[in-house]
Each structure stands twice: as structure tokens, then as C-alpha cells.
Image (cartoon, rainbow over all chains, first blue to last red; front, side, top):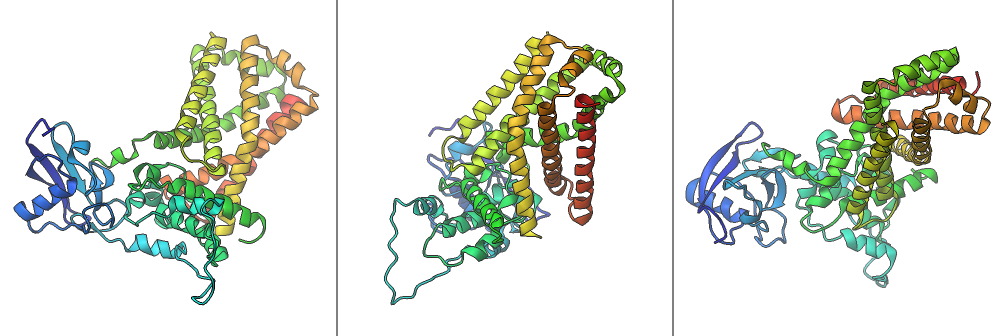
Length: 242
Length: 115
Length: 113
């Protein structure tokens, strides 16, 4: 056991937007994750606590919460790494999304914006056609690869202040997805996607705070993807395609 | 909620705050700057009167502030242009360090020349 | 929402920023040079008046600032003060024209009159 105290004081958000933090005492254990803490509270103290999780191993992206103010996957966050010196832990729902109850957010606006950014593949071939040959070392493929591992957990969206300031802003995840598709040579929706991601509710609102990149649990840089979109859309505008 | 500010506590976010506030202050200063230069329209004597006013220690100190603001907005701006227009990955933090050092250097050179 | 307009505004601000990058560097060097020599108004004006190259330089400088600053202000007003829309955009256009007018007046004073 690496801790100095054997007890955690955990303040957990209870209720919807007009809720409050409520404090719980949780025993501190070796190698304990923040998700373990939340699960302990629900199973041993307050069965009425709502939260989301599924895989517990950093694959599904459903357990993201605000941990001491910072958006994280709770399943992959060790208590030792984030706990304050006095053994205090503050757990809240993700920022920038409506709170349904306790630690559960309504993710609809987040996913709707993926659709608005045309963050879906637009096929140009059918099953009888040959497979497209794409060199893994081509520039476009490398750019797509850099952003393609996103699992849609919402950590970047919750960390982005431009999302807070401009409620229409599509956000880092949706724009990152759009950039991977623009670099997919098989995709046929480029023109519509360029138009969808340009402007003040799209990539041009980004101020390069780099918070999304700083917080992404997958090590993706949506900031770099958004910079790519800024250049691609500006070029399209100069060619009169926007 | 209570500790949400912690999410913003990283170098690039501070760089944004510096860039935005320096930009705002420079815009507020600009009309005054143009007015002062416009004194030249009233001849060298009028402009000299203004230049003597700027010799006061407090005004000199404000000038140091302005030069540092301009330096910070300039170096921060070059950094942003590089991040937006170049295909970047790992070196953005080094860029920030360079911008900070250059801004401080500009301030020191100004101080040395004024003193 | 007007994606085309926003994109052009973004481009205008970035291009003016690139121009300003060069100008500000020269301006900073000039400031530090003038400070060192502690020039009087007559000294300054004798160097500037009739200097067409410097006048063009500072004329372009004023133009770039007049484009760059109001677009930056537009983002600040929208994001920190909740002010956006046609009225704000027109006000910012007026600000841009006023900045340019004041700036050109100063350039005229220092380099011509």
C-alpha cells in the first residue's frame, strides 16, 4: 500500500444540473482505480448512485467522468495518481454535456455533432468491386491513422472550452473523425464534409488550447486534425469550392 | 465543477490566455498610439512635448509593459501559425518555450536600453 | 451560420498575422534602436519625412492591423461576452475603418506633413 491514509474522502456529484456534491468515506486499497471507488459507493453505501461503465479495461469509453476537475476514463485512472494530498477525491459528470443524474450525462449532442460533421464513411464502391489498395506509408493514410483510434468517450469534448463558449461548435472528436475521413481515399463525401466542418461552429472556432490533445486517453491529437481541416477548408474556399 | 479550473492548467491553455489578453490590451492601446503619432501633424514641438511626457518613470514602465505585450503576442502568434499551417506532432511544447524565452529577452533588451 | 464568410475571415486574420509577424519584428527592432539613441522629435521626423519606403511599410502595417485586430475582437466578443450577429459585425467593420483612418493619419503626419 503506497498511501499515507487508509481512507478516501470522496465527494460525488448527486442529482442533475441543480445537484450538489455529497461526501462518502471509502476504504483505500492498493492498485485501486477511480471506477473501483465509484463501484464501492454504489454497492456498499448508496445503491441509488448512477454511473456508466462496461468493459472496465479502457476499450469502451463509457466510464469517462470529471476526476478532481479533469476528464478521465475512471477505469484506467489509479486513485494514487489523482488523489489530493489530504485523501480527497472529487467526482463529477463530464463537462459540456447535460447531466441526466449523478455521474451520467446525456451524450446525444456529442454524437449528433459527429453526424453534423459528416463523421461517417461515404462508400464509393460496392461488394463486387475490387478492394482499394492503400499504401500504409502514404501521407494521407498516416494522417488518417493518427486519429482513427478514437472510441468516442467524450473526454476531449468535455475538456474543450470552445465547446463551452460556442454551444454550436462541433468539437474535437467530431472534427477529428472528419479529418480521418478526408484522408481516406475510398471516401466520396469530401465536398459535403468540407462544407460541414468550415466556419465558426466548425474547425475555424478552434483556438489551439490543446486541451483535447492534453486529455485524450488514446494519445490522439484532435488539435492537429483540426489544424488539417483549417488548411483544407481554407484551400477549398480559395478555389471557390466552399 | 468545484475543481473544473484544473482542467485548464496546462501550458498551451496559459499560452492562449496570454495571447488573448495581450491582443485585447494591444487593441485598446492602438488608438492612443495613433493619436500620439498624429501629434507630428502639429509639428516637432508638439511631438517633443509628448516625448518629454513619456520620459516619466511610470510611463517608461508602461512602455515596457507594451513592448512585452507586443513581444508576447508576436511570438505566441508565430507559434500558432506554425501549429496551424505545419503538420506538427511532438514539438509544440518546445515552440512554447522558445516563444517565452524570446518574449523575456525582448523585455530585458528594452529594460537595458531604457536604464 | 455562414461557413464561407467565417472561413474567409479566418484566412484574412491568418494572412494579416503573417504580414504582421514580419512588420512587428521590424517595429520592435526599430523601437529598441530609437530607445538606445534617445532621439528627439526633430531627429525622428528628419529621418522619416519624405522616406517613401518607410511610409509604404507603415501604411501596409496599419492596413494589416486594421484587418487583424477586429477579427480577433469578434471571437472575444462572441466567446466571452456573448455578443455576436449582424450588429456586432457591422460595428467591427466600422472599428476596422476607424483604425485604418487613424493609422493613415498618423503615417501621414510622421512621413509627409
